[in-house]
Length: 350
Image 1 (cartoon, rainbow, N blue to C red):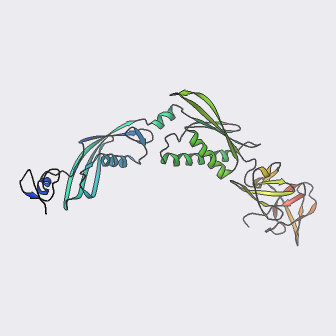
Image 2 (image 1 turned 120 degrees about the vertical axis):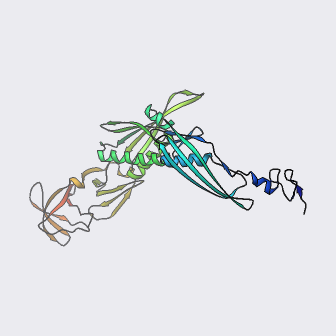
Image 3 (image 1 turned 45 degrees about the vertical axis):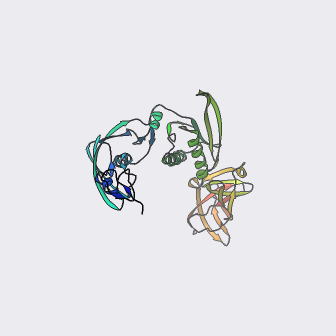
């Protein structure tokens, strides 16, 4: 086997390690190094961490301290099977003493090294929080409802959906996924969103869960670095009808169950399932919402017919018994007045 002379000790060696034999190399070997003082830049508002001039979300303060130490730790390139233990100890809210233990294999030898460093927390405002405080936005979302005023519950649900979408986008690194301000008006709410991409995601998610449509239009705001800068307005329209609205459409009386990419409901008379598009409901007439239905006395049940008191004339009238109807004579039942006359509305839970 060919051998080489170690220039330090003069002994023969089959291989040199950074110009020395294995024994000489390991005599002054340093497994790991870290600077005595480190700085962790953290946003005072949202807690994001600045890494090489880029803000990222990394969890709580202790997690950021540990990650800062791990990022700054230099372990020798020849080390393998590396195990690192980091213990941060808070001295003040702005100073942490960090103890580090490193174990690794180097040239079939087990090495252990202990290190200590100090991490100083520097708090400042991140790019996202600075923009929010300055009222920055690239898109306006105008949330309305078709041919009606949206309810407070609907607006609250839209805001909840928007916040969920923004959180997911921020977790993926989108620093413009925020709402800088909102404006409540009689017809709905306007949201001022950090980016058009975030606003578009919100519109799609609201439409997916609540139904409706949205359009977008751009207006030129100026130029920046030789490029045109546009502001996008998103006009989102919630459906004309709401879940549990009872509508009359093309000779059928339908209770709306759910909105999404399509509309689902139940035929009040037959119990048949209804599925259609928003366009197919064009021209429908709202009769009532289930929670606002009037009631009347059920006098008797005769086969497929119900004898009830007309709530306006108090005369006994015969109406068709709905599918899945379950009530006893002498009790109050919900009814809706249609072009066909009174219709009993079955309890959906039965």
